[in-house]
Amino acid sequence: MSFPFFDFGSAPPYQQLFDYAGRTDQQPVYIGWATPGVQTSAAKWKIRQFTYNADGGIASILWANGDIGFTQIWDNRSNMVLIVYK
Image 1 (cartoon, rainbow, N blue to C red):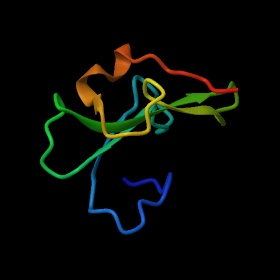
Image 2: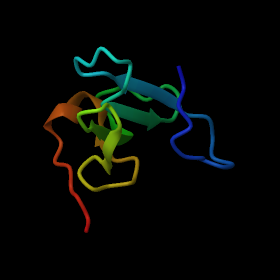
Image 3: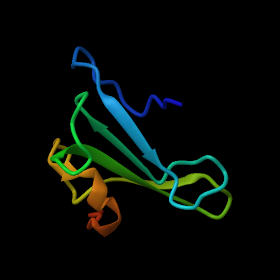
C-alpha cells in the first residue's frame, strides 16, 4: 500500500512504513520514510502523524517533533511531541 502524501521529486527511492495504531478503517496514524536499509532504531526517519475527526476525515497532519528532516526514530513514534504551528 502506498499513499502519495507528497512528492519527493528527484530524491532517491525511500522505504515507507505505516502504523495504524489500532485503527480498523485502514487509515494510517503514522507514516515514515527513510532511505532503503535504514534501521527503525536509527535517527534517520521522516515521520508524519495523522489525526482524524469523528466522521473519519483527516483533522490534522503533523511532522513528528515539528521536524521535517530525516532526524526521527521510527521506533519512538508514539513518544513524539507533535507541534502545531498557527
